[in-house]
Image 1 (cartoon, rainbow, N blue to C red):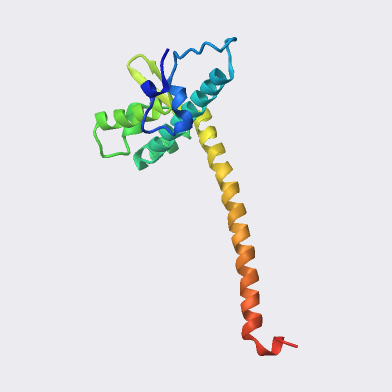
Image 2 (cartoon, one colour):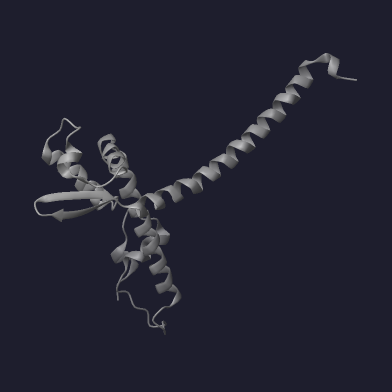
Length: 166
């Protein structure tokens, strides 16, 4: 049996610590998917999704990689074609392509000696969905702030304007 103390990790919050214990068994468990096991699976899925989003956003953080993606939005291209507009070495472009591939933002295939790349839509959709969730949250927050500021501004105008009192 693996104890939680054996598998704690400083970067994980306490409620996620159990997700690291892959081989733990508990004598009271009766079925293959007990509540603790279900929670561990869910935490792994959330952690995997979070890690994927982190990888995607790190890949998108670089302007060269964003330019490569913009070029690939127009269709498939070879590594040489993708490198042409940049004044960086072929190994540097290869590194950028590897980062994009690891983030699953691009697909790669080889045709003879030519490496061809194209966009992969799923990771961008996932990132866009995540951003959309927070955009809606912030829109609501900004609307509430706007309403509050308008109300307090009107109250201040009424206090400052002596003709508005009866």
